[in-house]
Image (cartoon, rainbow, N blue to C red; front, side):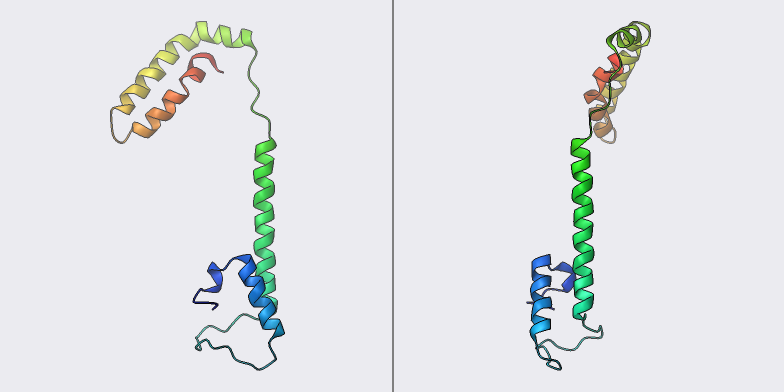
Length: 127
């Protein structure tokens, strides 16, 4: 433990600092921490954990960047959406809107009702 924190809540910088301190300490020296039933991590185990955490951070960062760079979903041509509106969209949109308003009146259905209200334009026109 370092400054009263468990090693699982330490930041990467703190872990690296502790790893450096353990490597610099002479062999056989004991820390001022009380003995625990769990054996302390070796410098190699700490380094491996830090590397694993860094790999996970890089994977998450690359996935988030990939999501940000992905193009929005393609929309249908205007003519297809116009035909949909006159054949299906006007009545389906009205039913969708009425259902979302009814859901908004109840406590349980409020969140889905608001989500449906946000997508009412898609129900009318497939936008």
